Image (cartoon, rainbow, N blue to C red; front, side, top):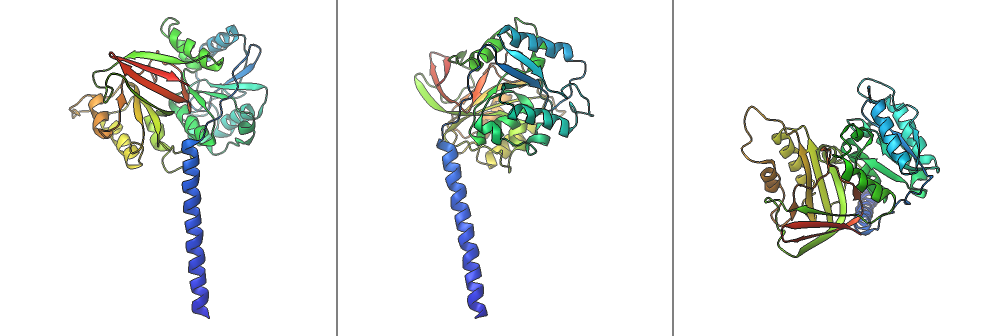
Length: 341
């Protein structure tokens, strides 16, 4: 009798495990092919919030005020996160304060977009404290780059598009330098079609004339992508186009992070990789021995197309990208065209 009960227990456990695996595979498949929700386009008179979910904004209020004036020039109303200019060691306020500002913005139906003041570090510390239930029912644009990649990844898995683009502190750059970045962000926010044409890099791979490839755009900062591995914010790259960028790292560190992404199958079934700015790469005492482009090409399988030099990341020319939107990429006569659906 006891032996029979043990067999039933083992069978029950195995059945539960099998069902769990099947459910996980089903959810992954659904995530790979679902159409993400596009937040409503902004209208004149709408209200947006500028807040700081991560790094400190010491002596930068005058810069954030410029961002406020820019949005107001578009006919928008702007409010600030209650704790945005607080200081708690490395961060713009305590985790609880930054979380409260973000939660208030997610829950407030009158807030139509959440514009990050800056990145730095700290988004991951509040990510799991947030309740996105009201946001999913009433989605709104979440905007930023760098550390904000944590939100791009997490919200993507919730089924909502986001904007990889300039932040409040981007207003520290000269207006003429960031003019195209500003224009691209405005286009996305107000529902205009978005497309780009860039000169093909000599390092581009598998981009012969008239070749086309498409997929849902995902990704962001390499370090943050790597830090999401093993969590519910980890991305599935199957049949998608992965965008990557980085700043202030040694080449060996970039290689290590890319190797980690490779081991997590980020480059196994991806349709293509777009490489943005690789800014302020540090020099090690022992030279790496090759260009950053060659380093990247050696990690990504030869069958995967790779596009370099897209103007997005930690340079002043930081064009808006709609994360979660299907994008078509075409190369013809040394010109790479990117068109969002």
